[in-house]
Image (cartoon, rainbow, N blue to C red; front, side, top):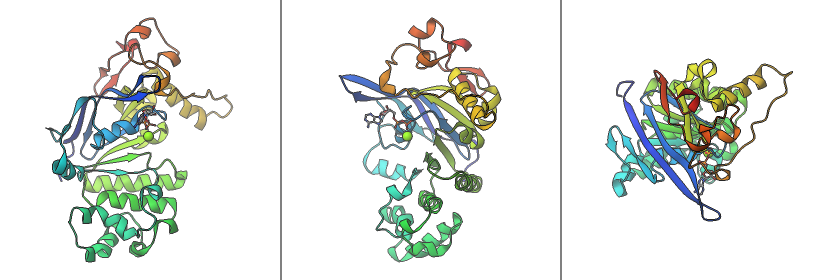
Length: 319
Ligand code: ADP
Ligand code: MG
């Protein structure tokens, strides 16, 4: 295990476009730069459709950016392919929202957990059960679950199996894309505790993607806030509640407080804007919803600028 503080993955100026109806182009990610560090969690938060999963598919080398570069431990991996790509993929694993959908219902838990190891010929078929037991215990499940099928387990137990599977190749970065969003709050809490313990023990970097601001800020060392394909703010997790500056982040944080603390106050709904509804080539992506909109916001996209150590904001108010 290398030192905490090592940069595992760097995304630099990543842009991804998709074709949209009426010959338009949808900018799913626009000029995104982020870093993932050993033993640290980078939370990525934003409403549904803001481009979180698209960004993570590029981080995982499942899709290629149209512009920008990706570096793994300093090495440019943007264009790798074939066997090199296959080998590289071992280093970055993913925990899905619902492992019941991700895994074949016909596979036993031991086959699900050991499949990546068998693919890379790291174990023999005869070693499956013993290996699966070891990883089940690591995620605090009974070893006997190795012989079960996923449908006979609860959502939280299945998610632990998903985590065990993500661990077997000893990845340096694990992307959790809404990995706890479908679970009850108490189950969610126990899964988060497990992820935190595993990170402490193994020094894994996490990319924790979630639309729940309260949850993200509670476990992330750093939080990146996405809006319509853009990172609009990035800051330490502990500073989000009191120190966030971007009007969008403030809206999200205040929504959290409205829901949790002041039940007497009417809640202003945050209506969703899908990336396709707005032309985001020019101007600030948040301008149509921003309570503090100025003239410049119509025509010029604010750059992400450092306003304090470790705190970046893309907003003309802080230019
Ligand atoms: P999130 O994970 O934040 O909910 P996504 O990354 O899934 O957002 O999607 C971002 C935007 O890109 C959405 O408008 C979505 O419809 C669009 N999108 C995602 N994948 C594709 C694709 N393969 N083809 C076309 N549009 C896509
Ligand atoms: Mg998503």
